[in-house]
Every structure is written in C-alpha cells, then in structure tokens.
Image (cartoon, rainbow, N blue to C red):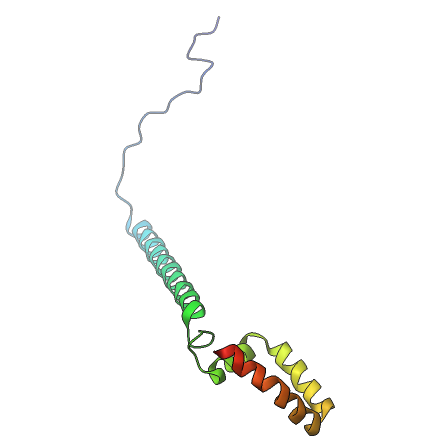
Length: 114
C-alpha cells in the first residue's frame, strides 16, 4: 500500500541562504549593472518616443499656426517619394505650365489658409 505522501511530490527542506563567493558576487554585480542599463535604456527610449509623439502632434513641422515653409519642409521630410514625384511632374510640365498652374492653385491655397 502506498502512503498519501508517496503520490505527491516530495517537499525539499528549505535551502539555507549562503553568501556568494567573490567570483559569484562579481557575476551578480555585472548582472545588476546590466539590468540597470537596460532599465535606463527603456526609460530613455520611452521618453524619446513620447517626445516624438508630442512634437508630431503640435510641433513646428505640421501645426496649424506654422508657416507655409515649415509645413512644406515637414511634408517633404515625411513624404519624400511624393515630393520626388511632384518634382518629376514639374520637370516634365515645363516652366510655362508651372506658372499657369501656380496662378490657379496659389489663390486656392491662400483661401484655405484663412
């Protein structure tokens, strides 16, 4: 017959805490330093991400009160392929058409700014 304790996993006796050797302590200190560096890196990355989000939301590159030049520079930085495509179209169209289109589009843009 089996006893009730034989079917369960045996419980080990509490392990006495020993002080680590000098070599073990060095390893533990290195581990702790690495953990602190990782924590600091995570905090710095989170702060940089929060700062980037705050700048994007109301920063100088896209705010409603920013100048047209700043908004254009922000658009160019965020959408380089679109700017390259527009430059290609401008080269193909030629200067006369660009001046004619600017005469039509510029008043529309100025009305939208109000």
